[in-house]
Image 1 (cartoon, rainbow, N blue to C red):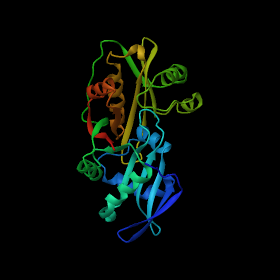
Image 2 (image 1 turned 120 degrees about the vertical axis):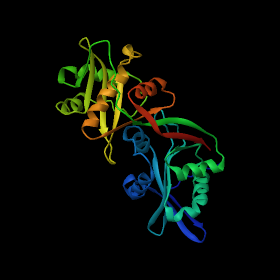
Image 3 (image 1 turned 30 degrees about the vertical axis):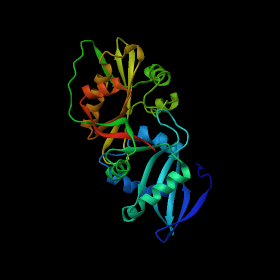
Image 4 (image 1 turned 30 degrees about the horizontal axis):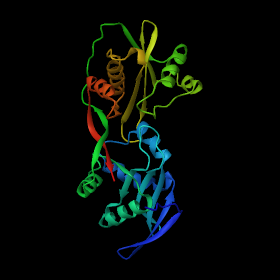
Length: 288
């Protein structure tokens, strides 16, 4: 199938003259905001933003109005797949032509996959009705309750200080993170955050064994938790302990702790589960 490589195109749907254009994120922001409002949970910044930044934004215009958009990912930043549509949204008043919009996308871009959130009920129902096979890609996690986890060993969970920066950076830089979006910070940036409450470390016998940080969501009062335990200290309950401690801190600040794990990262899912998190929404991967 010939894929679409041009800068635009003109089409007629149901007597309407539409134009396909490439946009930047700022141009489709109003439509994305409408999409976010239809979701049960907010956009999980750390995981999804990386894919969005690596993708290209396309929109269908009726006169000067963008009535539909999608974000196409040609190449993949792990753990995303390439040749995938990672967002697809049609304004409510134009959903009568969603089949035509979808077919145009398939014809012009020939994507192999569609990522769909389970709380995006309209798009989920649309693709399920078409009978495409799908698999579970990951889980959006929401803290259900506070868990008081006991540790037999003496552990200290504290805000990062300057003398801990190098050890923390080694963990952030050396580990193959599930969340490739977990930012590999430089020394200067992390040093500038000292005195703030963003970066935390878990210490055992004067050794930094884990790092956790959080980011406030752009939407409502959610905060995403990103934990990393050094590979030499895993399977000891440190991850769930660190997650629980940071979640308690965020809860006391008035935030709702959330996170994301891929389906294949069983250890991370277990750690979050022990810390009181559950899957509030799923990320599904449809094969087209």
